[in-house]
Image (cartoon, rainbow, N blue to C red; front, top):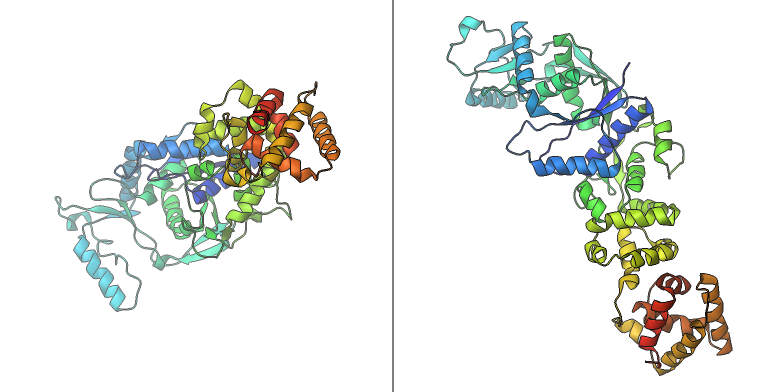
Amino acid sequence: MNIITRFAPSPTGFLHIGGARTALLNWLFARANSGKMRLRIEDTDRRRSTPEAVEAIIEGLGWLGLSHDDEIIYQHECLERHKQIARRLLETGAAYKCTCTAQEIEAMRERARKAGKTPRYDGTCREKTPGDIPADAPFVIRFKTPAHGQTIIEDQVQGRTAIANDQLDDLILLRSNGTPTYMLSVVVDDHDMGVSHIIRGDDHFTNSARQKLIYEALGWDVPVFAHIPLIHGADGAKLSKRHGALGIDAYRAMGYLPEALRNYLVRLGWSHGDDEVISTAQMIEWFSLEAVGKAPARFDFAKLENLNGIYIRKMDDAELLEKFIHALPYLEAGPELLKQLTPDMKTRLLKAMKGLKSRAKTLNDLVTASRFIFAQRPLVIEAKAAKVLDDAARAHLAGLYRKLEKISEWTPETIETTIRAYTAGQELKFGKIAQPLRSALTGSSVSPGIFDVLYALGREETLARIQDQSQLS
């Protein structure tokens, strides 16, 4: 079997976190089985579909590293094909014309509610002959759902499930204005795209039963279904914006790495033993639908942040720098730093990266931690940092300046040796020098390790900043 999965978002909004996980699982299953994942934009609702949303979906998938195969299918372009299949079902007797008005259907539903039954279309037009329907009467085309028996779904995640056919409505395939409904369009497009496996949220389970009946009525092979549980918040409630139901663009702006987000999303409902940090190559090697759990997964920002921090610390400094620079346009205050990014600044950032990433959980943390590199002289000293720059501290900065300017080779080792020798010679605790030095060099009371700061700034900038705050000024 040629394995083909698909991701089929509606472009009525941005790519949200639940859709991203669905895309990831489709992508992984395809890659794990040497197959393809195709992308279909379900844009038949032309009033609500926007080019901006389409672009955001494609860009979001690209940022996550989830490449699709073959050309993108835009569902609205397949309209005539959908109509053709609706007419075929009508001709074979698997569907029928229904002339019931909206008022008549609502009356049916009200009678059902009063009788304690499920509100549904009652099949009034089901057995009508063509002669019973006026030629000029508006009509919809309805699918003739079997009145008895069960529809069996052999689901790869949820297991074998039987749904009574009398619980499934005679669904509309073609509206009175000639436009196809979601149920018909999805079946036709999945068949025409050669989709072998449909992996989607378990909120589509009943839809799958209806769609399976349409496949069978057309004599088409039924794809394999796999319904994955939805994502809930950390409190177990349905995922909302307060839990993290945001667009993928928001996670990018919050400073998450796509590698870390992929790792976190795949672990929402799927596992491989006790492994927590899983590379993309390992995901592809290990992934199977059988390992996807049936229970809803819980989204936890704290766990995502911790995992993202692990990825940041493990990443090679040069690789992280390139990702950081590439992300600046999307990060809070990132564009401001990007304007100042000269080759010299880039060199300083690379030297500082080891210290910068040691406590960072997001790329925005790197923005905050690296501000001292971009600061312009004379530095604006924060109030807390200014408190340690008293006369005694400034005098020591002057003394330290004279020692540091004699260093011929500016390395972390020579810097540390010189500062510690000065501290010992003055019989001072290290903090008595480190804190004023930090204030003078960064304008803040918090920074990466002080030796890393000096090394990153370089000899000339370090000495100039010390001179600005010492009694040498």
